[in-house]
Length: 156
Picture 1 (tube, rainbow, N blue to C red):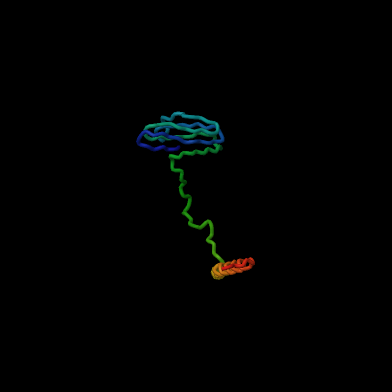
Picture 2: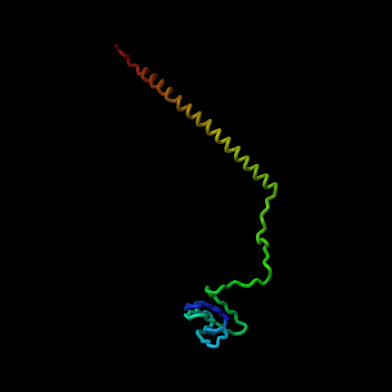
């Protein structure tokens, strides 16, 4: 017996999957004294009807058949069979102290390498700046020497 309780008009909708022929009966009381056959199916069915107030649905199937109901309007939680157990499914990962030590050493090495690279980059920038500062002087000297080597005499 599946109850659909309401104090006003409501639409009832659910799906049924079974591996044998089934009958779907609905009524307005829990004894199903005014029950009406609203459907029959051999495997899969979707039931939808509107009623005013409470309604109850009963499914009739063969004894050893499996019947599954998908009714989003009904609370489908299962009552607790025993006291809840709060054990963790996945155990907490505990790192080995050697692994922790190695990770700290790796981080320390990485910091040292980054500091050395930063210092080397700074030295390279300073050296490149010095070369660029020296370069224009060398070009002007070579240009003056090239102008004097033309062999042309200047007269005043």
